[in-house]
Structures are given as C-alpha cells and as structure tokens.
Length: 300
Ligand code: NAD
Image 1 (tube, rainbow, N blue to C red):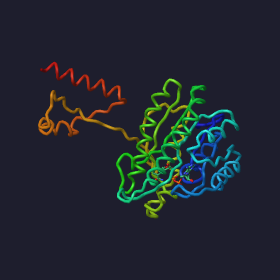
Image 2 (cartoon, helix red, strand yellow):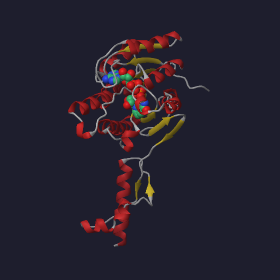
Image 3 (cartoon, protein in one colour):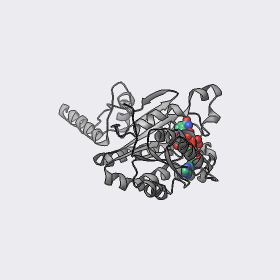
Image 4 (tube, rainbow, N blue to C red):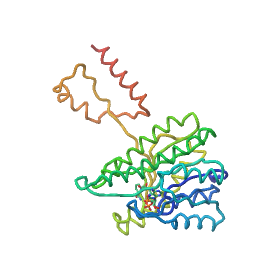
C-alpha cells in the first residue's frame, strides 16, 4: 500500500531548491499540503527573492498539488507556521532543511561567519519548531526532521561553525524526541549527502550524477509519515544508500579515588573500544554507571 499524506500539512524550510524542493514536490504528489518556505538568498546568507519558493509552488500546482509559498527567513518561525495555520488550520510536519555555508578556516573565521550559521541552522530550526509545537501537542501528532550533516559527526576542515551548529541540531532533536513522546510527536535527525548549490563545489561531475537529491527524498518522507515510529534517531542517505548512525561508548573503568597516574595506567580500559555498548538515553547511561559502581563496590 502506498504511503500517502492526505489531510496532512507540512512546512519544508529552504524548499526553493536542492533537497528541500524534492521533499516538497514528493510530499505534494502524495497528497500533502505544503508550505514551501524559502527566502531565496544566495548560499552564504545574504540577499533574497521570492522567485525560488514561487517556482516550486508553481510546479506543485502544475500537477494538481496544494502548496503555498512563504518567503520569511527561518528565524521568523511564527510567521512561517502562521502561513500554514491561516491556509489549512493545522501543522503536522516540520522539515527543518534551510541552510547556508560560511566555510572558512578557524583562524580566519569572523564572528559573522559563526553568528549567521547559528542563526539560520540552529535559531531557524528552533523558531519554526517552537511555533509549530503547541499545535502538534494539542492535536497529539507531529513529525519533525532536523537536517544535520556528516560534518557534525566527524568534523570537517573549514567547517568549525557549520559542524558545531549541525551538532547542536542533533541534541535539539534528541531532547525534543523525549519531550514529544507522550504527544505522539516524533523528532529525528538526517545526515544527507546530495549534489546541490551548496555541495556542488566539492563534488566531481561523476559524484554529482550519483548523489541526486531525489535519492534522499524517500527516507525523509518515511521519517515524517504517520506510520513511522522511531524517534530521537539519526538517519543517513546518499547515492541510493540508506542507513543510521549511533553513538557507542565503551565499558570504561571504575577507579575509586583515582589519581592522574591511575588514569594513565588504565588508559586502555578508559579509551579502548574492545567492549562497546549502545545506550538509548542519558537515563540508561546513568543506570549503567551506577551498575558499574555497584559491581566495583561488591568486589572491594
Ligand atoms: P541548497 O543551498 O540547495 O538549499 C538550501 C535552501 O535553503 C536554499 O534554497 C536557500 O535559499 C534556503 N535558505 C537559506 N537560508 C534560509 C533562511 N534563512 N530562511 C529560509 N530559507 C533559507 O542546499 P541543500 O544541499 O539542498 O541543503 C539543504 C540542507 O541539507 C541544509 O541544511 C544543508 O546544510 C544540509 N546538508 C546538505 C548536504 C548535501 O550534501 N547537500 C550535506 C549535509 C547537510
């Protein structure tokens, strides 16, 4: 049975081009009503035009879908959500996708490079999600995606600002997942890889032809569908490959009254990954720590 979005309302931020455009088009093809948000600026966070969002809305209406344009910057989350509420009276899905780059080595980074990246990626996701949250809570239904990046997980040369902001979004989503659980609001993070205005300078032509944005779209649509159940997770897509990333820790070592020398002498147990474990939450982490301590005490 095909996965449909009839009667659902979605906001896709930064949907005037790249990945966001493909999400908006496919959601609309599957019956979703879509707010196509894009301020239509350049890739570095300046200037703006309504043309990008209008074009995507035109494409959607061209095949009989329902869409409305919004040209606000994502920090104006309330007015983006108001566009959905004024038009359709509800909001079910928020895909926080808008983004810019200000790549520069840390030594040459200016405060504006840091601030603009945080304003668009972190403040933007906060502002749109915050404005949508009360509607989602009241209707006991919501699907949220934040767009992170492999740069957040692994770091990337020249992207101290971007990787810090993208990692902030993982924490944002993980905590939202916990607060949203009892209201059937799911929140997950995405690590995409696709050719776009943003990434084309770092991809060869051969790579670009493999990493089409359309290959990321099916994963994102599933992540915001009513049948989706995972929350607080990190999913990855690129070039027709789909997967997940989890953080693993090791068993570590309890060292009562440790000195610096004890830490040095036990470094293999502290830093080695021979025995790994996966914990779902901070609560699990605390439970495991207490169990380790108790085990150690019992041996003393
Ligand atoms: P893109 O530049 O094609 O799309 C980003 C869109 O966001 C643009 O249309 C732009 O106008 C819009 N935008 C920028 N600032 C905005 C603002 N303040 N308010 C509203 N809209 C704004 O790039 P893309 O590759 O499609 O990127 C989409 C998302 O995926 C971004 O968050 C990006 O960081 C992330 N991402 C992309 C890749 C990749 O390989 N393409 C990898 C990791 C993460």
